[in-house]
Image (cartoon, rainbow, N blue to C red; front, side):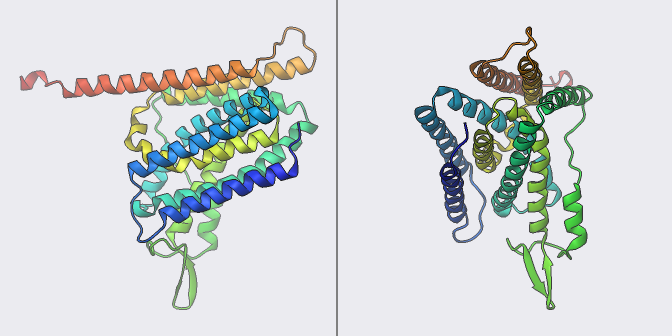
Length: 327
């Protein structure tokens, strides 16, 4: 089903209005830290907005497309949690003042949203023309899932390496030594210079685009509809900034979350290959209904989150126990 132009305009316009209001509210007056209470309200609001959009799709286009949206949204939101580890590292590396972190994330995510929109359009056109790409996407997701598990089994820590876009920005523009409030550019001795604020915004935006190499093929494994792919990505990204502040140190306790995400990527990769085979009239290859995908994704995230929190609690209790030599 091809969505009419007015639907695209309405959704994109509505998202931009909500984000503009969000930015105006948090940027009123003096710069200040984003509180846990604020983050909780905004996360609830954005999740409710996504649910309302999904229910509207249910009422207007039926449960099938609504199910695809919810499956895509949950998948993208879940994969975004893993992205937050890197965001923490970027914020620490660039020593971003806490009062300005929310603005950095918002602008970085807006950049990512624009770039993902381009990526989705190109991906949809390519998949429509070259159906064999579904095999490539499926194999890539399975390969990524295996690499995630192998990396964690080896105890490899999350790390951040500057990408090509960020290195080019550093070379192309003269940069000030430190931050100048929340300004991204400043004029010094008649010369226009960028501040580290712009550099870190580019780092967040371009890094999130790199994560799209996993997430975009994953959602195309759940739906072939570019409108659903875009909206699921947009709603997931909109809530990502507040989730960063809400989770805070909790991310360090989600030790099993990457295993859950690896399982989801592997599952969707296999689903893509099976459906591609089914489309090629291979009789034994089944199609996996969207409700099954939604159930697997939801159950996986719940199980890995609960297991992580239980382990964190057990480890905390062990750490609180007195050492034998101290008794």
